[in-house]
Image (cartoon, rainbow over all chains, first blue to last red; front, side, top):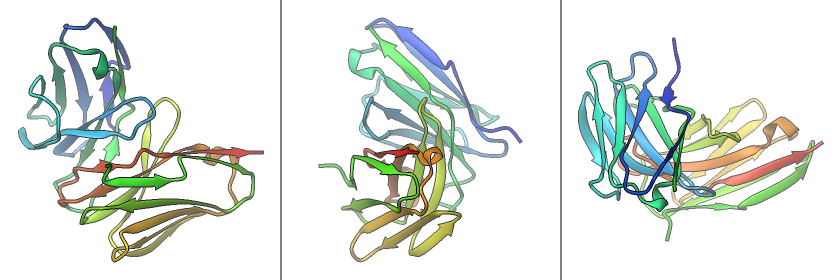
Length: 114
Length: 109
């Protein structure tokens, strides 16, 4: 059984560019949630995907978008990057929604926007 | 105002000390989670609570739903406990969390 993996580990982009971050969920998990963690802060909920559909969204603009694939892996896309988008991006997978099951976090992708 | 407040923000302890980290929240919740984050970012789930108390090894977590407060205790602290401890609440029962800003713990040998 493999854990949650994310790629890339680190990324440097220029303001205005676009970025795609990837997350492979824990085997058998059909729910993926994405979080943004600025330096020195707690994570902030971006959105959640359940069985390939968006199932909830936090207070993030539409330039943050996502996808979940039939194998339940997921992508986070950010368009028109801004300096404040520099953060650690975490994904977490779980089985079902609100089932009381544990969420498993990936190691994160550290994005730096210059 | 953040829905989840943690205290203290930073904590330094001598090895062997008993440690308490507090979490207060302002929303109704279906569950509260305690998480551990090591340098570099990896997050591990320690506890999920909806009532009462849970214990795992030297870690104890309690929650008082009426007072909207939870505590994480570490007995006989060890340098390997050094990490950031984060409280997260699940208001809607959908595994969509509000997080505290974390408590950075350093245990000195």
